[in-house]
Length: 200
Length: 294
Image (tube, rainbow over all chains, first blue to last red; front, side, top):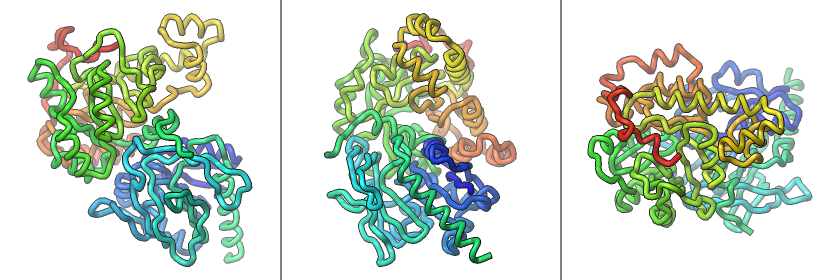
């Protein structure tokens, strides 16, 4: 099984490293051809306006949307990735690029400017022990639809959510050595593979 | 408990900029052009380096009014420059809420001996460097991001290339060094052995390293990326060009697709007149900004 990291801009190498730590084959995804070979895709943190614009130029918007909606691709978005996956974005730019995959409403830069960026301990639902969440000009989930499971919250709001084969976090698990969330996503991707097999 | 301004949070901010282009802007309109073109951040300043060079005199931090206007106008991060060693200017910029401070040789240095103690700030700093020693000295002072100095405001990439090659060459040397050799190297560079050990282990600088100082075309950006930059700063190169919007978009695409000559040839077409640029031999030693703050 291969898992891809969208390699347009942002924390690409960090996600690749965490996937390798989980002993899975990690590849960069830059075009539709490289997307077709992966069971899962990580959309890393970076600038959502930049990544969103270049996703369209790379011809990836359509294929990502189709593969995920047909259940053939698991997607994990961190920070900017979460913004791109959201159905609705508050405080975006005029033509905020979106993939509109998840039934969540997200507020960009919800904590303010960089000096308000922080790290904190938080509970991620499936885990017994807390983990360190690193928040960098992070978004927050303001509203989540019925099919969305809230995976983590801090006093300011929801910071992790899952909807079927889609996972999104406001924070950056790739910036710590803790591989649990990546492992959790790897397991989601394994399930995708099972689904595919059954369909075949 | 929320912990603000940890080194991980400061360094992480730069990690989110990787593969991107940071553009110098002097007006709200320019900032919007940069954001629309796909810049990952803008550097707000009163004059681009080419104009600072032409104007002469003492170059200081920008007027806070102008910086605030740009912060209001765009949603991407806003950086601002302060003079080397001028921690009061840095305190002002942190208070204003800029997302990153560039302790920059483009402005006139305020202190010829000491850089700012950047550990004291919650906002991250980027600093220029011409070699590995300089980069590691800035990191030990708290810099969370490094950029090559190049030679600002020239539109001539030769110095940025020199500095990037030097840093990469020295990293390769460090990787091959034995423990005792590393101790001597640390002494020669004026840096701690610990930092050199970290470089040897990670096989790279401990923080993100961008290219800056003379990048004026998509090909320049691709060149610097292929030499190992994590991203690029474009100073005078965008808004001193005849068609800023087109040049800005082309440099963004070139930085992402730096290893794709087909796409690079496409985006390089018909960009119009580039910034004029300066040949290095026309600069006296006193004209060179890169020698400031070693």
